[in-house]
Image 1: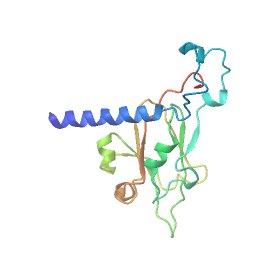
Image 2 (image 1 turned 45 degrees about the vertical axis):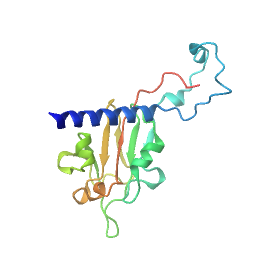
Image 3 (image 1 turned 90 degrees about the horizontal axis):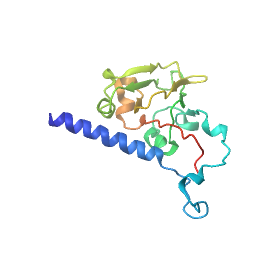
Image 4 (image 1 turned 135 degrees about the horizontal axis):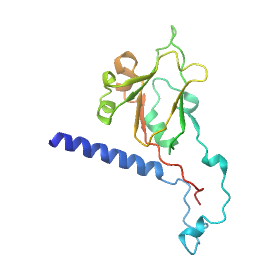
Length: 177
């Protein structure tokens, strides 16, 4: 009973911290643009920028792509927030004589993700699906997603870098001031 409570509490704290970090407004200003008489006046008579409201295609790892030796947890933290219906694109080379194969797995919960339990994970993309345009995954549910490379029995995941988690949030209906 106590371990189930501890696991639930850990999951709650992780999700809450991911949500709060993903909602942090990195461009917030406290001086020049905050002279409003009331809160709602910030959002009146503003033209909606259509490009801000559309889902994004985000290449996992940016120009680095999906490969061993890159810190994807750090990448996810720096490239958030992620919104519902954004698409993650995993690009990686097909296996050859000079490189190790990669894949994309999704883990069902935090515990299996932290332990890199590939047996409980589901393969989303095999080693050949990352070439060309890459493998596309749409964040279509408001839930934490746990991704990792599962090749070599989870070695790339266990190394601590070829894995990351995201918690998509609802896209704002108006541009932030």
